[in-house]
Image (cartoon, rainbow, N blue to C red):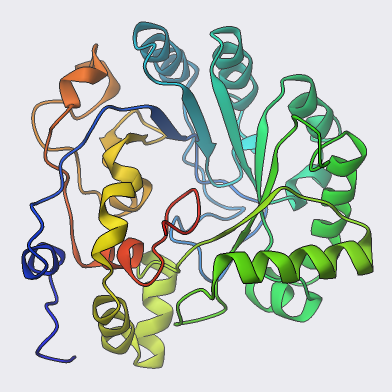
Length: 324
């Protein structure tokens, strides 16, 4: 790795005259309801798959809703997994949060809509006015199937068509449908706006599909993707790529500044990536049971590591796409 480029994230901040990261006001609770998924994608930093058994209990889900109710500044419940829809607490969390007037995001892999027991999931999402952020790492079958599995592209397209039929993705529709792109390997995403235009053209022309936004995400050197890099002997190269492209202008918009990540067991983290690395929040609050008032986390330090370069490289990367 280039010795002129700092390896540790804190060193990158200091190099650009930036203070260490601290949280602002929390406006999003991102909840991983479990690790079970119908897919086992090569890049998955959660290491989700069909054989994973971790899942959120009803009691923990009720605790999530209680925290939302007591903290009106938290406007958004962001549900992830695994495939969150496969877990029994998914629908109670959705209906409970919507009853509290909160925005709900479902991070959907699209293929889950065709799993047994999920026949009415798309209709449920539309009825509850849930915002859908759907994974589609390319607009060609070859690239998607290489990364996510055989015939995943075809099922993903059918899932998008079903959502479109319900009103998702329409130009004037309030049913929000965003797509997520991530690179095939150890590279940074291309320009988000240019790639969005290409996605829109390809999906409309070949499949008649509409969507609202494309979000580009950087592959994080964590878990499954990290091991792939190690097998290929490219881990140091990729970490160097991320560090060399550190962009200080992305730092103010980092998702960890306004988000708290909740694990399936109620553990608390600064972000989903820290959750997978088991880097807990600083201070006394380690689980939902420790936390009554989320405003107590305002100005709290954020745990960082080398992987944080993934969120600050190039145009930046967050759960909401590029940062600038």
